[in-house]
Image (cartoon, rainbow, N blue to C red; front, top):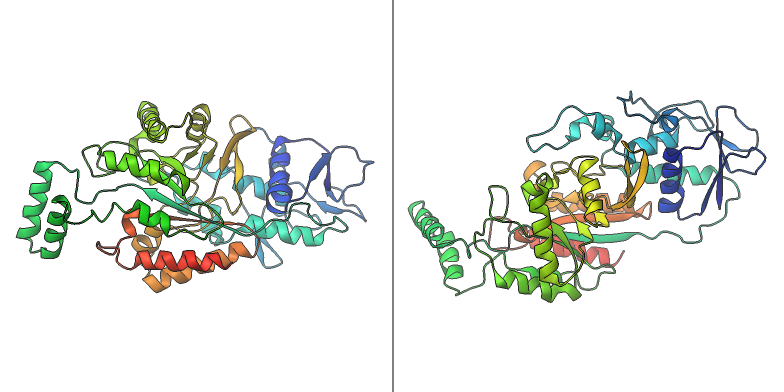
Length: 427
């Protein structure tokens, strides 16, 4: 049990302390305003000779939302935000709250072409700690400063959680007669003989469509401690959505068949993050396919969401978790932690029931944005995983089924992914 004394109660303080001591470190927590109770930490301006004192910055006692000036210092080689004059050189609770609540996403004015918060606006990018699970590192260092707190009753263990976004299960089939004929003709005219024959053989059922590989991808995860998460796109054809124009019974059947091997979630189409009638239709389609009353897990297509409205919508629709918390272009830790935590709605100034799982790295980011080779990508993934392992956190990867085939342009990535999975079995 870790006891924290504070002069004033604050839901923001409780949220930060819960993540640090319960989620990350596995300890029980008590917060008190009684100065006569023994405390392990004093969250107050006046120092104590026998208790570790953390001086408040002030953010946790505010109730509004305003642009914050984020300054940094160093603590034992780690970047530290919101410097103060306590026994450690910054307000760790305010810094944790700022990063977890995604405070900066509420006040940022710049958005990209998809309406998303851009990584360049984040403190983690600007101060150079995007690739570090910084809150988790702070937590372990803080625990080492405390005296006689005992061991956690539920010690945390490193966990690898693989996730797969199923955007498209047909590279060539189910595109309609006219589109298929046009693509075959285009392949011939441009001299793409290999692609022409691959397309023709798939359409004529002489070989399997290269993207219809869900069973094979699911089988790759055998031997892991955690089941893989599969997020299924259930929307219609669109410019930024799956390219198959016709519905498929085979897609429906394979999702049903894989229920014993994977944990299923919804991957809403591009426009459904703002058009909720589309979202409900797609969610109903997945529930009907899987024979479930509720869908619990979600990851938005293009990682397209807006705080706090999108998460509040998920709560109203009965979802329990969201896995969209990462950047499309840059790997790393968007909320500076590897552990799941509950969404904090700054407008309501309260913790909400939706659990957020931060994803560390995505295949597209490595190949398309960072322009890394296969060997460089593998080394990058392993380097991030080691940083998570050092804090006994959750390492979450995001791959796409259409990238795990050697018959298309992502040749070699299937073998890379298998090596990553095999390596995680020994950790």
